[in-house]
Image 1: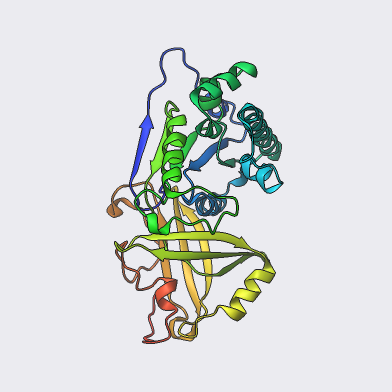
Image 2: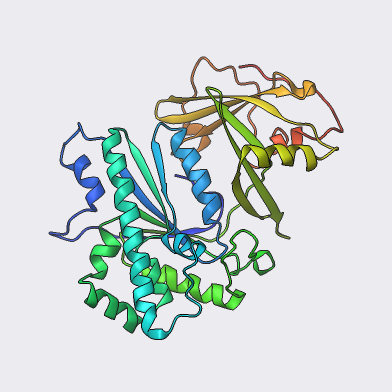
Amino acid sequence: MSMGKGKMWSQDRALSAGELPPPLLSSLQSGQKDIAPIYKFVMTGGPCAGKTTSLDRLSTFFRDRGFRVYVVPEASTLLQTGGAFFLDLKEKDILNFQWQILKLQMSLEDSFYSLAQDSGKPCVILCDRGVMDGSAYMTPEQWEELKLEHDLDTVTLRDTRYIAIFHLVTAADGAEKFYSLDNNGIRIESVDQALEIDARTCHAWIGHPKLYVFETSKDYSFVRCRSQYGIPAYGMTTVRYLDTGDAVHLKRVLSAREYSYAVRHRNDPTRNVIKQQRMCFLYKNQSFQIHVYKEPAEVAGLAVLHVQASCENDQDILMPSFLNIEKELPDNDETMSAYNVSKKEGGKKMTAEV
């Protein structure tokens, strides 16, 4: 699975003799084919690392491929937005505060897992942080004391609850000028504090069989309304570009009212509104999407095919015979992207056949 074009490193190890696999894989490996699989992942990282955007993108990615997706909210954020702040806590109260976060996190995860089981469908559970994250906000001695008090152990917490851990490195590491407090009302960390928390959070997960660390990402975005069967979903992404051409972006879900306001008051007079019809299908375990432009009129009928496959080389992609491909574009060619097509100047009509 691709997580963007940024750098990534992973920690992967084989299971030793007698070691049990993560429990969510057990039903698949034991031959119980009547049980729908449930895959549970953690999205973690330092402050301003892009978790919210990544959760949104992964949710869309898996839903488009037929999974029922559940997103477990961050327990710490739920408590703090409800008025439970840790800044004025005395040292003796930190353990109880972190225990309440941990207990709530496990309860939320278990509730979503139960709902996933009841659905009887293949499910993906995406967790906004996991049970080990709290240890990054305590001293090692405090963490050991908390585990001892509540009869917990690191291996069980870290290794048996999740299929994989995705750690997103904070923007404070290498993109300091884009480190922002705007997208999270309770974020208070300075750049130096963000770097320290990022390192400690990543260290908390070392030892998990599938730990992946993502350093940077690229993207472009716009205000968008997507609908299926008449049910709309709205979103807005703010993109900021690095000097190298890389982009840092903040993305959030919009209400219908917010979307309507943005369309009325934030529209760019130099660009057209883009309307597309998207057709999604699978062919030989490869995901295909055809984006057919409806508006503006200059590009109406233009069809752009997007393919996501696990093969390393484009030559290995198996193309359906019923598609008539007029032209192949390299990965870095943005000429037919919605961002470029929306420009009002240079209204050259482009055509493609499906």
